[in-house]
Image 1 (cartoon, rainbow, N blue to C red):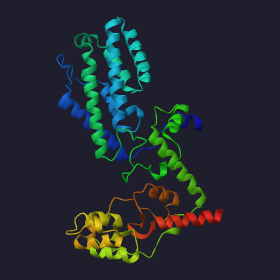
Image 2 (spheres, helix red, strand yellow):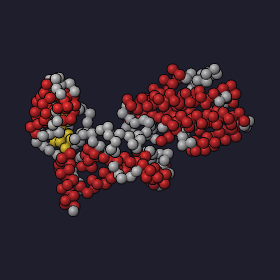
Image 3 (cartoon, rainbow, N blue to C red):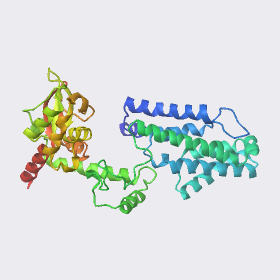
Image 4 (cartoon, helix red, strand yellow):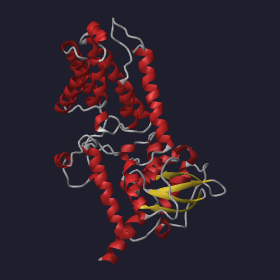
Length: 382
């Protein structure tokens, strides 16, 4: 009985309330803009601009699951438009209502699959046309242009802007997209030795092309390999490898002193803390160089060839730690397993992860710490 109950329960992992609100608010913005500025809730027989129910279904995909291949611009715009054309054609030629609906939906599904533009709400677009012969007789095939194509294009454009503003990726990541450093190398978790064609064949073999993109498959395989690699590290956690004797700075520490500390200790990161040792943020050496080098006056940066020389150049600016520190980077607790830390650092966003207890910093794990721990484990296993 328990297996049966589990089989009929939800299979999608629980989403955070923040993600639920993000998706819902995105749909609110998309439908509101579409309704207020372009589409009328009433039928406009002159322009054919009006809201149709399938736009609500499209919004679910565009704002809640923007990584789905079914939600991508080609799938959404072409799928809905094809459905509208087929729905109108069937409505104008088939008199029986029940047969119109069944035929319109069936032909739409086949056409979308052939055009690689599967978008589930398109079935509802075809039904809308098949069930409204009066509107179709007045608009004809203009129905496919407006409201369907125009409305879908608008929702796609809003979804792309909204994803950018909320830190999501839409349209779908491409396999050959640049990494975070702006180079053509794949990110570390994606360097699998598998080509785009091989990954595509995997998706086709297991009939998952409609559920997952090639780039996301690469990321998942890479993450799985990283996770599997950590199984050989044993039960190591952050407290086993973290540096405890920390050099920290206050929020008012000036850039010149920060540069001196980087040079003196050869660190790549310095935690920023309050007077009672509460963690406030972290400054990475590269961030200090980037922020200060761009504004340092009367400095020929092309002549600065070493980190030491570039840090010297940063001394000309009186910036303080709180102005350049990173407050949104990842943190961990002493019990965080190495597997989680390894994944954070493999993406290349951070050189070190602060370890906190009740908001106070008690240690820091750097890439050097991680390499040393993995090397020691490999030596023991060997």
